[in-house]
Amino acid sequence: MKFRTAASMLVLLGTGCAHMHHVQFSEIDSSRGRLEPFEIQVNDTGVSVHDGAALARAAASTSANATRAVNTGEAIVALTQMGPTTGEPTFSDDWADQMLAKVLERCPSGQVTGLVARRETMKYPVISGEIVTIKGYCVL
Amino acid sequence: MSFGRSGLLLVLASIFLSSFLGGCTSLQSVGVTSIPKERGRPIEVTENNVAFLGIHFDNDFADDVPEELRRKCPNGKVSGVFSKYESTWYVLVQNRSVTVKGYCVVPEPPVATAPAVAMTPAEGSP
Image 1 (cartoon, rainbow over the protein chains, first blue to last red):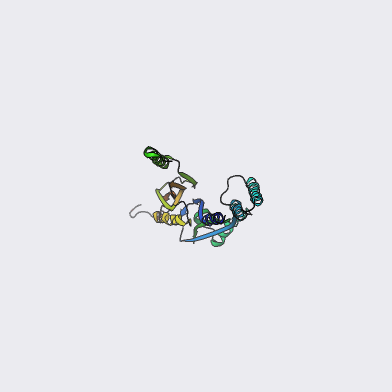
Image 2 (image 1 turned 90 degrees about the vertical axis):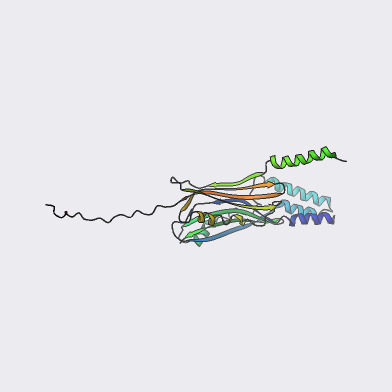
């Protein structure tokens, strides 16, 4: 049983890696003046119910009732979160909304070019970093 | 249980065929910006990132693409930008690839206008 628990932990710990979901490039205008690069990143914490349930199952593997309860809970959450997702679910849907304000903060002239938008996930056991990165150039 | 020589060959042939004939490429995202009427020189930049078992530790491999585009179009505007992000599996290795294509449009230098000269009567004219 210890081996099973250790194997589950190892698998979960071993999944820490980077996923890139989407990247998009925009026009770059080098003819309007000097360009200064900038980078903005916003993120939120995602939670993997599946990973959490796997951990709970490993911890409660001696009790059949507890394992059944974990399975039922996981199934209920899975049924309420059906559909395609990008990364893991988060607790809010507006964590990336301040991106535009941050771009204007970094580039007060408002003249921006060469924008690159990247949506990525840094996956760790149970939780994940849900990240949006904007890179670009401010026209000086 | 033993496969025998023919069984082993069959298994190897199946692995070989599935590796080369199976669908292993996935298009993750595509984007296009407005395409200019005056299309200049086409330019293209591609960056790749290979990882064993598809385990990547960062997503920085495409960070140099904008600078590379600027190097290829130093004084112009890269417009009509088509960007594509795809991943391909080669059995145990995953390759992620970002391709960006666009047109380098260099603005024409402003035409120097001759200063207006007042018409003067030519010498000797009545």
